Image: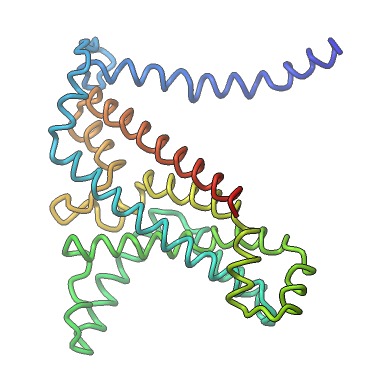
Amino acid sequence: MKTKNIMYWVFIAPVLAALLIVVVVPFVWGIYYSLTEWSGDMAQTPVFTGFGNYVSLFSDPTFLGALWFTFKYAIVTVIIINVVGFSLALIVTSYIKSKNFLRTVFFMPNLIGGLILGFVWQFIFTDIFNTIGEALGVEMLEGWLATPATGFWGLVILHVWQMAGYIMIIYIAYLQSIPDELLEAADMDGASYMQKLKNVVMPLVAPAFTVSMFLTLSGAFKIYDQNLSLTGGGPGGTTKMIAMDIVDTAFAMNTMGLAQAKAVIFFIIVALLSLTQVYYNKKKEVEL
């Protein structure tokens, strides 16, 4: 037993060391730097200012605007991605002959890097949409990404297109684990498709909703590369998300202490929202 315990710690030690070095130590130092005034210059000694950074950031309109924009973006994308992903999963687990091909097609956008994806969709929104709008006389398609509203929906479309196929895979795994006997029993009882979906399928795939909503919620808040390459926060910073605001505060304004304070608040918000979502989803699983 002692030998087993020793070998257990020998094998787990590298993982614990990596976790300590990469996550725990930087997180603790980050909290310390959030209480200081520091430009990021290693030759400069950080000046301790207490909670001054935290007080000032809540009166920063740029930070509050980015936070509100990110909240709206997260709510919309979480709903749409899960609805689309679940719908795609239902399609590719049906009896259509091309379901394996469709799985590949739907998942492929997730393989494209965020920066490249942003530039691709920027070309689509600015050049292709303009061309179609001018040809058809549809003004709504012209000048996409030039207004806060179209910039918002451009980011939503991009993120949904990228993530729906990935979330689809999670739903497929749970849909395929449903015993055929239950569905056959529902058919024998005369249940319609919607009745089977509501009373048999959805309760059994409830854990998939918990996992998928957690991934999409945390991912929506942390998005940066697509925001950078698609809109760059424009026009006038109206589509700047919280991650981009933190990076700009740190590396464009050289106020590392304030940026770290924003990062700590950002971490707390994402952690609270994610834990709350998981708690309520788990509770719903039991009720179902």
